Amino acid sequence: MTEKPDNTRAKTKKPFRNKSAIRVPISLHFYAVEIVVIILVVFIINIYIQSIFKNYIAYECISRINVALESMQVFAEKFYVQLGDSADDTDENVRAYLLNSIAKSADISNQANIVLYYLDPDTNEYLVLWPTASNTVAYVNNANKVIEQVVAEEGYKDWASTQTLDLDGDLIYYKSTGFTWKTKTPDPSEDTSIVTELKNPELEDYYICVYVNSSSYYSFMASMTLALIQAALLAALIAGILSMIMTYPIIYSSQKLSKFARRIAKGDFKPVRGHLVSKELSELGDVMNHMAYRLEKSDIEQKTFFQNASHELRTPLMSIQGYAEGLKYGVFESPDDRDNAIDVIIAETGRLSNLVENLLSISKMDMSRSGNFEVKKQNIDAIRICDTIIDRVRGNFIHEDKAIINNISITSTYIYANENDLIRCLENIFSNCLRYCKSAVTFACMTDDTGSNVIFEISDDGPGIAPEVIDHLFERFSKGADGKHGIGLALAKAIAEEHGGSIKAYNKPEGGACFDVTIPVTFYRNQLSKINNDSTT
Image 1: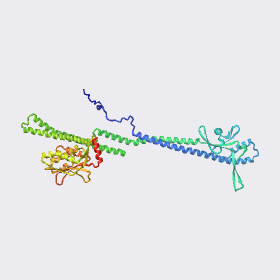
Image 2: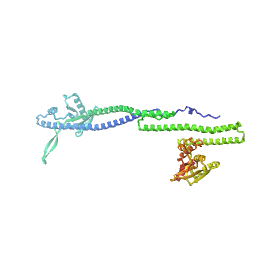
Image 3: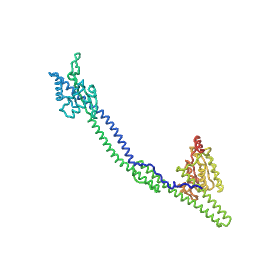
Image 4: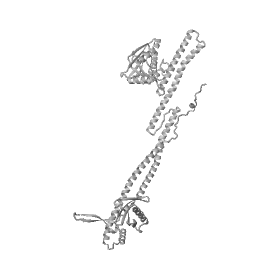
């Protein structure tokens, strides 16, 4: 029991569709790219701003502390002079006088916060002397917190450098120094003064801390970052609107081309009209219009081909059927009439067979041109082609009592070809020339002036090609006055072009038609070896 082929898949198979589960509109592609660019730009700008601001904040805080310390130096020098004029230098009076001087001094800069505190060297306990209760509570509390951490971290021991501490999440820049002042004394050896830093023993446990809270700067930097984020969000919104505006023409044009492609699939080859927004889509539209034109032309040629082919096949079939029925029903009584009927059947059968072979060959050439079929070729000596074609057509010329004049002028010249197809090409031309010649057909084979092509030249001594036929001579089903079916020369052209060559027809000055079939020569030995290897594998 033979198993029937399963055609279920073929019957239920649907047209190919993209199997991708996610289909993202082109506008979202544009928008995603713009968002990525915006995020990268904001990220880079934010990093750049933060690096600049951090360096600027440190520089600005240190500068303000130095300005405040310079103003304290002026105050210390004046206080030293006033203290020297005072008769009462007890510890309580010095401290009271110091606080009174700070409160009334106009030399102290307000660039930084200044704290005067006393530190007991034995117990390491401190007492903030300035600011006092007359100042704001926040100022006093903040000063106490700063001094508490300075003492805990022993920041008062380093008088030279500006230090930092973290106060409730705020970065504090400070410098803590002892209560000293500078004085100038004359240098007896030179006409200059020597700067000396002095310290009063009564004030050796008193310290000055000058600090700047950088939180305002960092708040400004955070505001800048927030503004940058807001600008990025606004840019993202604008980018979304621009993406829709920019991609709408592309989407519209793509939909237009998709509808055009669907029309082509249904057999409507009218070209697409209207403006396509981009150069690429315009080029695609032009290519699709050209494709539609070629498809329409091919469709018309195919329909014409089938109509003509059916007509050409019908004519010999009707003759065969008519004569066969005549033989069956005894229409032809005499032996001569029956023999003639049989001859007609044989002739029409040969004509029909030749027509079918030509149709199959030209269909094979069409498939090869579209890439759906590969014509097998091999390296062939052109002399072999000449000998074969002469042997093929000699019998027809003898039957018609006409001559073949040969003029073969090549030796050991190779071409890359399919022997059967090339023989059929030349045979069809010989058949055409034999039909119209008066007494002889001339066959010549030579190379061109460059030696890169073999030329098969076939000419007759007939009336030549009619002017109204010569422009359409190689079109399918184009026939002259005594033509048969109009396939032979069209097939000859298709075969010549399949072999990388060409064919042309013209009238000779002395009269008669001439056909030149040009086929490229295979030059190099390594090329010949490759061709032979390919043909054997």
